[in-house]
Image (cartoon, rainbow, N blue to C red; front, side, top):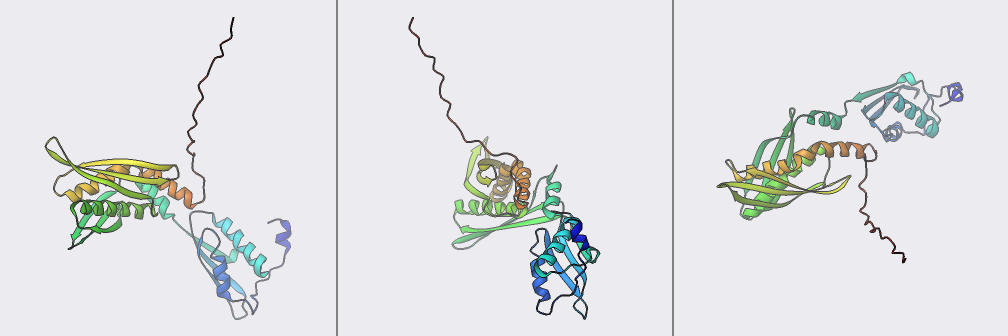
Length: 259
């Protein structure tokens, strides 16, 4: 806003044909704002504007956007000192910082077997916060493993704050050096394309626990990257780099010149 904007006289009286709730709804659509509440007195003069936001944009930018929308849509101009913005810590960013140097810890693996179906609950913990995933599938031996792997992935997606990014592939129980070992394959779709990952875990007490640990073994090394990608995508930022398509190189052919 240029100098001319500052010369415009204040017009802080809301017209009678304008609903206050409509103003709140329109202002809450400003990127970065979660909630907006306008306070008016008996003469419908705007006395206060209260807003909540997360750490995506600065309060100064949000105040300017609020002033612009009020003036452009309703011709209202108020003193910017009447606008209060409360900025909350960006929770995804906090989770990303908590993940640095740490890993999601398996807190609980629960499997309930019915007559035909099996349901599983897996809880993952990080720095005092718990992320829960659930899954339902057939009660066959292979189906039980698959359900636990899918519930583990659902808990990971709860941490990533995304859906349908990960899927469990094949789950196998093999013998290695006289010990039972679980192998789990995981497919992931990120900003860089599709990834295929493999995780392993020895069976210590329960096979279901080993399935959850093998699933986490497959994805733990990529969690930091995926969390960063999800945050960048939520902010509308481009990925740090895009995969290059494979281009077949033509062989260099030297012409044979006759003597």
